[in-house]
Amino acid sequence: MCGIVGYVGERESLGIAFDALRRMEYRGYDSAGIAVAGGPGLAVVKRAGKLANLEDKIAEVGSESLNGTTAIGHTRWATHGRPTDENAHPHVSYDGKVAIVHNGIIENFAPLRDELTQRGIELRSETDSEVAAHLLALAYNEGETAGDLRASALHVLNRLEGAFTLLFLHEDHPDQIIAARRSTPLMVGVGEGEMFLGSDVAAFIEHTKEAVELMQDSVVVITKDDFEILNFNGTPAEGKPFTIDWDLAAAEKGGFDSFMMKEIFEQPAAVRDTLAGHWDGNRVTLDESNLTNDDLKSFDQVFVIACGSAYHSGLAAKYAIEHWVRIPVQIEVASEFRYRDPILDERTLVLAISQSGETADTLEAVRHAKTQGAKVLAVCNTNGSQIPRESDAVLYTHAGPEIGVASTKAFLAQVAANYIVGLALAQAKGTKYPDEIRQIWDELESIPGKIAEVLGAKDQVDHISETLGAVKTMLFLGRGVGYPIALEGALKLKELAYIHAEGFPAGELKHGPIALIEEGLPVVVIVPSPRGVSQLHSKIVSNIQEIRARGAKTIVIAEEGDTAVEPYSNWLVRIPQTPTIMQPLLATVPLQFLSADIARENGNEDIDKPRNLAKSVTVE
Ligand code: M6R
Image 1 (tube, rainbow, N blue to C red):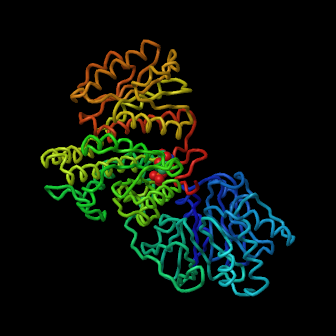
Image 2: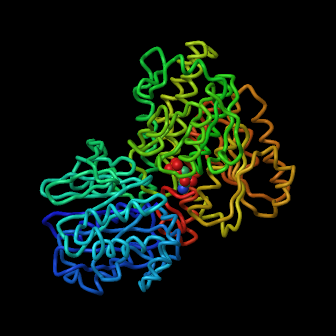
């Protein structure tokens, strides 16, 4: 949710922390701040709003007042307390000596606040986080742990309930940062003569490729030359070392004006890399996932749990898996799943889909599914994150880092990964012949090239937003696997352009939503392939006529050569011919462009950071 960074070294830490926050900003942009030590004293600068506001503030106070070789920084997605300067992190203790940054929620902050108030300590913010700064100062200044920073930090951490990543910086110990994690992520970056901390590796990717992931309930003390990991009781603990395989370019815009646009253009590679290694020439393989053929054979139902775009990818998978494997697939938004008492057992495969691997709703749903005896397979883009760690098996998407808050390439990679799972199930259960599986696999492998064609024809979409005029509401219609595409298109438009948008199954329109259609209302229609055997194509052509008759302006996404839709399209966007089941991998792309264009027409220039959102939602 929030982005956290830390640095101890010999260089000026302000610039390093600021650049790290720039890369972390996708995790939240309600406010940002940095605390520096190791110079004249402890200095803190913070500001509500995006990082640009913090930059202005630094210029105002003068960077020379923020000299020092140790820094902690924070970019916030507000939970407790509005996005104001006071509520921005770092928070400073009553004696001015401790600065803390926090990601997560301290659930017992109310009694802790009361306790501090009774001690005469005045809390300056509305946050749950500030208590940690005062508690550390108290523990360091008096009582059994007085004068011992490490013991004081452990004492405080053991009093906190909830989920947190916390970094502590003390003016009298500018050579170290003490940090802890419970449920929210924290990585150590191991440099030469310098150490880094980050909510994810993007925080320090420009300085080192060597990282250590902290495990649940771990504390780490970093100095410029070393790091030491402990349990919450102070005994030694292990982290998980790894080498970062994302390069710096992947975390930069690479000449595009936004991360999102760059990521849209990375979609052929995202799908290609996700498929890579899962076909051995004859068979679909799930080798790295930790699922055996016997496991796959044993499942008699699939339950998909996910949120947002990941949910839409799962909905596409429902159509594919039921069609290929002939077992029921249920799908539910993760935030509803565990409160509904779903019926699962050891013959249930739960597919938990998450780009970040951190989404609290999905994580809790995974935990619930495991208590019911189901086997959980995570489809995830972030190596070593919590959801794969707690799942029985994992299939990684290889989309690379997705920085734009609105999901694009990760969504397409999820669809591809879900389809790999579907084909592996069909293969294990023998519901498709090997040559049918090979044929579907060949179709999948042709998709990256087809996505590249859609990207190359971006100008088809460019003129739509220019001629559309002001849009207040937009509808998206699809049938079959076109329905999840409609939902994803509507979500992108809401997120980026702040326009009311709804996705509907086209056949459902006449059961109510058609009342929304009025003269000039733009409606996007995703048209299935006319070459399919089902009657979906002719049905949707009828639906288009019904809405046109009521004054709607239609933006039709249809495959090349589909002439039946031409008379009923105000704007026609062509995608390459492909079996309808593969359409989510192609038809979503023009909708991503369309949302970005309309967002800009509406004056939202910063499509990477839509208002009120955060990339990973680590609170329920
Ligand atoms: O990291 P996750 O895939 O678990 O995130 C799920 C949703 O929060 C995410 O897809 C969200 O809906 C995006 N903003 C969509 O663009």
